[in-house]
Image (cartoon, rainbow, N blue to C red; front, side, top):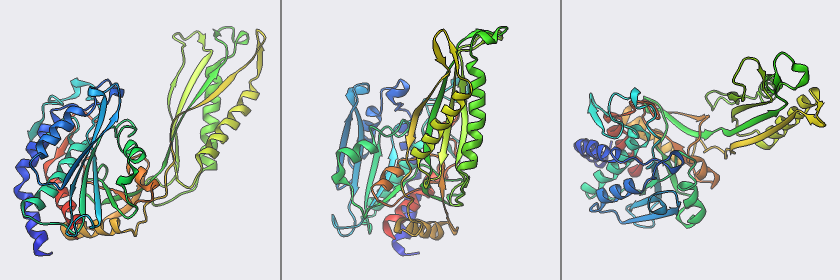
Length: 421
């Protein structure tokens, strides 16, 4: 391990208390999307700008996506540049974290105030502590250590703190890419520290496509003792759901061991109808599917399959009631994300991250894919190699969410090594 890296690692250790203090300050500011009834990220972004105001970044830029629902009508993203040894000509490493958090949920399940952080037993408790405060602060102090020592890294580091990750990135990464494409270069390296495992040995290079769709069946409500006078939408929906579930699993059964689980998943997750009594045969019924699909399958093809099969089931139940042909079956797409091509497992960012983990932790990292979605997908669509990695206890979105201080410090060391190697 080179002398420079050793000095940086020691400096990060010395900054441990500052990291905890910064994380606590940021957790205190709720940054909840207007989609969840919050004001957005403006106050938290201002606090972050205040924290780094006197840090010797070479350039700090603020981009504001318009959103009339949010405080001051904007959703801010901050880019802070620390140039590499060749100045503006250096290779570039993006480290992207997000400012927004999800709501705390049921407060009775929290042992402490989610927005009044508790530091206890080597952990910082609070909403947003792990998702994404831990990595946000780790990235800040990885660069702070370089600054304190007057070291210019091999690569320019662009710390990026974005809005709206939790509700789709429409006012964050997606907005930046769409409105400021000049910011990004094909040969840039991208780290999104917003997923991983407890050992910090999993590097995500691929994501499945995401498809949420709703089946809406309309029949005719009737008293359950006289079913022949109506058309029970619940029965039709049960039939459709059961056989569609089997069809999708059987037809799209290919496996790819890069992913965990290695196959596409098709899960019926929600169902509802207006019947509020056992003796009502409902005239409407809805079922929602959450599908995580291997990227080599076409979502258009799968949607066509769903619609075609729905028509077949409809045909089996056709009935004229009061001059109207029933049932009606609609397929509504609730969310769709077509997965881009995975990051090459042999790409430079993967190689560097593996090297840093091996050098600092003595462990071999595993490369793989996930069923969830991160904003790394937006960069993969641009052809930019992006990886998702962090050391996490995976308490995100849960009551009593926490960040382990040791994870924050150790991840800062890996981030610094990425800039230096």
